[in-house]
Every structure is written in structure tokens, then in C-alpha cells.
Figure 1 (cartoon, rainbow over the protein chains, first blue to last red):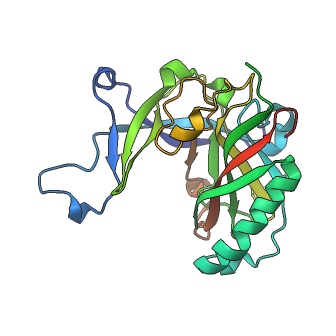
Figure 2 (figure 1 turned 180 degrees about the horizontal axis):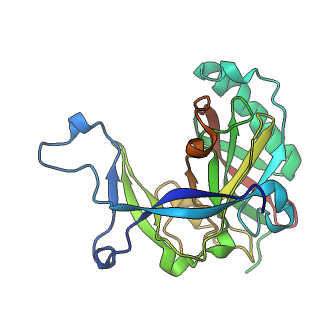
Length: 117
Length: 143
């Protein structure tokens, strides 16, 4: 594939440890972690030269029910550079996305849980 | 068991400018996962609750994708969970625990990761993106 590329991806290290110990990550600032303690017990390892395929060239391979993802065309009416302003994101962009999903998927209920710029 | 209504947990992701060349979003093909082996449930501890996500063990079987030169009017839609029969079991009880727990044996997940392509392309404008995570209730024969 012409535009497939190779990337370094980080995976959890495959250890016997995970059969008896659950990985955790504590989402608080480092300053809130007592000295000598760690925010996480996860051990990640890089895997190099992983092929990453271009979706555009393999449209027939992807889908929400098979790969679990797809891409769609959606032109937002909200100037995207304004989305760093959270009221605009919350009050304009989110309702627009919810309405688009409702109509494009024939969904009955669409409810935003969280968002992030 | 059949369900007339299905529930998915879906994300909508787009760059704020394009074409995106810095840290595009990589998505792993769900059908290339061995869910019993590859997914390790992990605690994500927040001040007000403990959430759960999956960490991923490496496998040569994994098939990763990205959207080359993604533009702002192109959105990636990816699922973290789906109750639709055939892609997952229909268990409405999951609704109650979704906020806390993704430790389900038959969920449809799309592990995702960003990766750096700048070494090959040279310096690029830093990525800016927006992601919205939503519950979607839809008819089984729809979507």
C-alpha cells in the first residue's frame, strides 16, 4: 500500500504480573502523590515498525460493526478555531454533533458524556 | 437474545485544521483483536470515582489504521462499546455500569493511539483536535 506507514506504538508489557495485579493509573497531579509513591504501575514498551494502513485505500475493510470505526464527512457550522472556548464547544458544537448523529444514524437518543479539545 | 434498541458508546474525533500530519489518530481493527488475551482491564483512578479502561498487549495480528491527511470536515467515528447482537451481546444491565466499568467480555472496542509521523515528514503544525464521547441509543436494524 503506497501510503501505509510504519509507526512506533506503545503497548502494555506482557508480564505474568497482570495475572495477579491490576494495572492502575491515578489521574491526579504529581504534587498530590505522596513522596516515594508512583502514579501508576503500568509498564509500557515501544513496538517499532508497526504497519499503519491508510483508511482511504481500504474503505471496504472498515466499518462500525467490523473494525469498530469509520470516517464520515461532516462540515461543522461552528468555526473550529473557536472551540477552545468551552462555552462555544458546549453550547454550539456539542448540540450540532448530537443532532448530526441522531439524523445520520437514525438514533433515538444521543447524549454527550464528555468532550475534550 | 434480541434487542430492538441498541446502545453504543461512540466517539467523534476531528482535527481543528487540516491536513493533519502531526500525530494522526491510529485505530486498531476490532476484528484483529484476541479480546481474551490482548485486553487487560486497568483502573483509571480519578478524584471522584474509579473508571476502568483496557490496556493493550502487543500481537502481530493487530491491524492498525489511520486517516491520511485528515481534514477538519472529516470525522472519525469509533466505538468503545456496542450492545448490538452479532457485534456484542445485548445486555441492558450494562447501561448502569458503563460509567464505571468497561470490563465486559463481549464489548466492541476500538483501541486508539496517536502516533508520530513527523520524523518522516519533518516539522509539522502541532495537532489540535476535538473529541466528543457520546451514548447513542439506536434501532437494531438501523445505523
